[in-house]
View 1 (cartoon, rainbow, N blue to C red):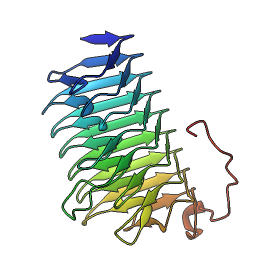
View 2: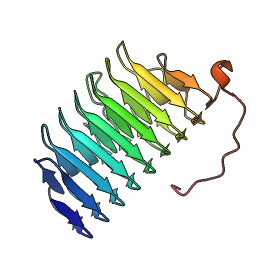
View 3: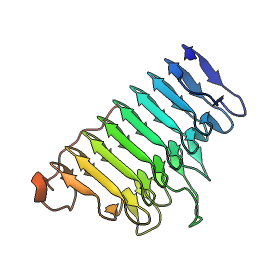
Length: 231
């Protein structure tokens, strides 16, 4: 099923995908009462050149799902229970390419909540992000990204900047919640996030990390980034 060139707006829930192989192309999904896209258990979706904004959560993918996002924008979504940008459920897979995730908010103050303003990657999930900007998001813990225990994530050529968090030692960038993660940033930038840039022990390779060390080809000098197109 392919849904293309659609404007999905002003519904209680934007669209529910409960099958496999569902493809969204050049859609604008906005101003819906809860989720922009809800991917039901064991479903799979691919999202291309879409603009998903001003929902409670842009994309909520339940457990055992597969999500592919390319050349899309997830922005200005706000939720008190889930991240504003994207929630990836347990045992699920995510790939994001050439996209922007910005100005999303989560105001969940419960220690058991799904924190993270931009992304929440649940336990046993696997994620890869390439050439993607995660900026200006706000969460109670993990302003940009919160990664649950036993999850794996790799960020390649990504920029994570200007995100804010209110709790959990104020990790504005990437917060690793729990234990036994496999998280790597390669040729990426982690800078100007509030409080600590990261919590836990991600591996950095050939990246620019504010207040980080210079092992593995990393730098900790200011990359002098100009305001980006997410502003």
